[in-house]
Structure formats: structure tokens, C-alpha cells
Length: 297
Picture (cartoon, rainbow, N blue to C red):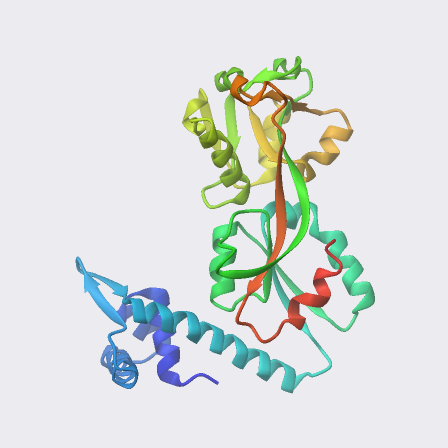
């Protein structure tokens, strides 16, 4: 298990405030300071510093934070396996497209073959999930968003079309449209930090545009609300095909065919992105994701 002073260090990394850390741990503020000073003396370097009256981690502090979270994760895994060696609990994170429209049948197939396993699933945006993976709160995550492939281990799940959609009968469905033709519409977008939004912003940026190019923008974190607004004719959106598969098959939504700019030959703009299973490279518990990965493909 972690040394109690390391636990204080990780809590301070979370709050970046000595007073809040002391309150959270039910100890005095001088005790928090003493714990940090002990670690700094032990490692021979400063772990925190104040910049413009704001507490920040030093470069050495960032290294210790990363390794301490990994050590804490390993300690908890060992404890879990010693207490209940016959039961495995998987703490999984999934971005919203995967969590709402892809993962349910995967979990069902996995549990049919592994009824002894317990699964905890958190559905959040890419940014939050990566942070929780770093902190050892999740064993692995399934994401459609961007992540640092040098920082994490990963396995490809599949490639998924990323498409523009609107309600059936919309003028945007009349043949191929230039990207500029869509800017008179209201764009319905996910919140900052979501993989779905990041892809759209990357595509627009490649042609020197942004979400501000549209006449209106509505930011929504919930897919159901986005789809209700599309159905009501309140805007268009760009989503993974998996998220609107049912609406497309039932004819309630249509796929917007977008023409590439002339410089690219005027062909249809087709966008696909990869869904990945992502894990911490340094983790010794690869079995936490290896068996599950086989059911994702």
C-alpha cells in the first residue's frame, strides 16, 4: 500500500490547495506541509512551487505524480486479487458514442463467457476518461477521440464513418453540397473535450474554417437532445454513423453528402476515424484488458 505521505501528495495534486487537502484528509495544514517536505527531502528535489500565487507541480513533481498513481493502482489491484482471486472487476471507461451505441453488445458477449466478472462502466468525454486512466481510476478506456499514442498503449477496435446529418427532407440532402453551403445552418455540437467535436474541429480546420463559420451554434453534451433537435429541424450535426444508425435506417435522418474543395478533385468528402482501446503502458495487469479486447472486434 502507499505510504501515507504519498497519499497526501496525490491528494494535494488533486486539490492544489493545502487547506483543502488537510480538510479532505482530516489532518492539519502543517501536517500536509510536513508530509510534502519529507518527500522533497527524500527525493532531493522540489515537488511544488508557487507561480503568480498559484500552486503548481514542478517537472519532478509531475514525474512523481504519474508514477505514484501507477503505484497506487498496482497496490489496489494486488489487494483486490488477494481478497477475491476468483472474481475480477473491470473498471471501464467509454466515450459517449461508444458508451451509448456500441459497447452494450460487447459487454453482453463478454459476460456470457465470463459470468464471474464484474463490470463498472463510466461514460464520459475523452478528456475526462484519459485523466481518470492516468489516475488509476479506470483499467482501460474505449475512445473515438484523439489521444497521445506515444503516452499510452492502444489497440484498434474498428474504423467508423463520421458523417454530416440532418432531418429527412432538408435542403442539405439535395445532391452533393459544398462545405460552404452548410454555413448558413445552425450547427449542433458536443461539449469541449469530446472526441466527436474534436474530429469536426479538425476537419474544419483543415479547410481553414471553424465552428464559428456556421450562422449559429448550439453546444450540447447529450446525444438524445442533439438528435431531437435534428429531428425538429433546429440544426445539423456531424456524428459517428453508429450514433444515428437507427434514424438513418428508418428514414428519419439523411446523410449530408459533402463535396471536397476543388483543390482535392471535387469528390465526396469521406471521413473515417478509429475507435481504440487505450491503456497505461506501464501497467503490469494487461489481463485487465486483453480478454475484453477480443470481444470488441
